[in-house]
Amino acid sequence: MKEQSMSGIKPVATVMEMRTLRAAMEKDGKTVGFVPTMGALHAGHASLIKASASACDRTVVSIFVNPTQFGPAEDLSKYPRPLAKDLALAEASGASAVFAPSDAEMYPPGCSTWVDVQGPSQGLCGASRPGHFRGVTTVVAKLFNIVKPHRAYFGKKDAQQAAVIRKMVRDLDMDLEIVVCPTVREKDGLALSSRNVYLGEKERKAATSLSASLKAAAESARNGEKDAAVLKTLIRDAITGKAERLARIDYVEIVDGETMLPVEKVDKPSLAVIAVFIGSTRLIDNADIG
Ligand code: AMP
Image (tube, rainbow, N blue to C red; front, top):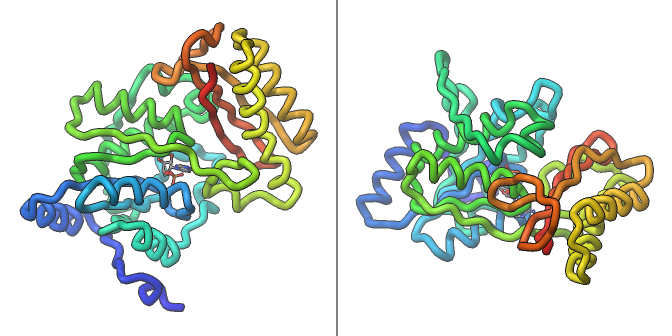
């Protein structure tokens, strides 16, 4: 099937075109919601687009596999890029426009400015993936400047990313509202992710250990266990017990959901956050705890 016959939406490829489209929305007095993505869209992305479309007059989705947030040994070149399917899903979920620029459009030669948020970006994925959040905040700041949304929608699945973006918006006085939407999961609990397509059959089964371990820890906390060390051990054991040798834990932590700093006692609402390699695929997940 030809790309464009699957969807009426034609991707906007240049910053100039996107600015022109945005100016027309401004002239018509429309509120604009924005959903930044790296494409390979699934029901998690769709939930953000739907949330925006129900609250805003217009919804802009961006699809950009941002090279500056990938480390040299990461999956940039094999990251899935099914553009035609993505356009159809974005449109069906309520998007009014899709901004899908090239690398050269976003990072023309000579580009030398970074947005580097300290604090919540430093531990967890920030420690395991040096430079990752600097790439995320730089591209998101650029996208905010191009799309100029009233609201931008992010998934709780990437809780640290959401905390870093919220901090960037506060620290740099960016004039928009950040909305964080719940994680969408498969029936067996696995959080939807564009990277789930990398999982083989056995790995896919082992991957359910992430959400199962978080559920067990949340339940234990509800039943009165407040010691973060005990809860972290419970999570680790649940993952290695269920996924056996297919799982390699990157981190298991219990943190304050805003600062992303570890807590010792779960005596106020906190967040259990985990990153686990299943085979060679790195998956993340999190759950409210306490
Ligand atoms: P990505 O394309 O992976 O960069 O994700 C784009 C946006 O979709 C981010 O705000 C993610 O947090 C969000 N997202 C990804 N997976 C899910 C999910 N399973 N549920 C809700 N939001 C998600």
